[in-house]
Image (tube, rainbow, N blue to C red):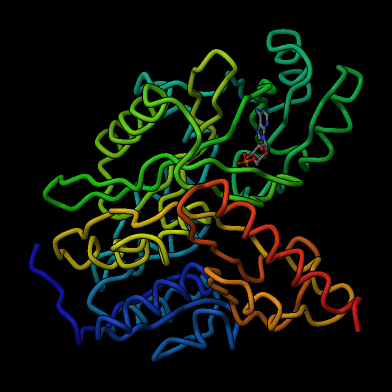
Length: 382
Ligand code: AMP
């Protein structure tokens, strides 16, 4: 493909923090950024050249948007397939709509993975309450019922500890197509963010370790504290996903690591990922610049991590007692503060993150958690 060079306009579907960090990387390299979403004054819009506010279903607006840019990418994979298709009439869409189609729907995603011979959490398709009852007998309890489409950060998920809870869970997911997954008593959760160019070159950022709280990512430790064998296996599985799915761009594969040292793929995200935010400060090329390079047909950049790093998320809960104490975080050495410019803080909403850089993961973890405690303590001190 012909390279899209600095000065060109890039279109981003979606307007959250991932688009914001992408836009910062793109503008630093001299590109123009246009963003499209139903909201105004958005995290991405605030740092873009052009912010279009329209519904994803307004396909004429989508076409107009795509006509004004050289390539369209996205930061939000739940964009309707028709939106990606309308954009593709006017500009290349990368990664391709087919990747989006597979990864935005749990059932398609899991079916793809198991057909490709990749290890996934045992699952069953649920279309009726009777399917759920039968699946619970086969997989046993505890299990998790997840909506097939449009789920993220644990939304649309119901844990079933006893078969008697089946009906409540079925109502909970809105009696729509769902997937029942066996509950995995994992040792750790890990992920690999990687990128692939159109000519098939593959690079990755190594395996990182993730801790979730209430189904939302809380802490990422880079590198993961796992054996070399586990790290190599996760990297190889990620490469296979990229090749079988024919991804051009950035994608993250999330895994459960069992107590036996086996890896099971939990899910994939066809874009930069929260567990790759540390790359912004710790790596030669961030995951956002890598997405830019991949979709513009530029050579991929070095993924070398210059130092161990730990990222902690800042959720809206921190605002409960007033504005957090940013000066306290700024006083901590080796901390980078990222805030997404969201106008309202709500519990569970991702408002920003901190990244700590240190010679060891242990020190980085201690620094990141200490900085977050200081920020949180702010409003209560006075
Ligand atoms: P998901 O939205 O599917 O990535 O789920 C969010 C988080 O919920 C995961 O990162 C896990 O911490 C937890 N979780 C989801 N599915 C399972 C499962 N089958 N077994 C154990 N924990 C799970």
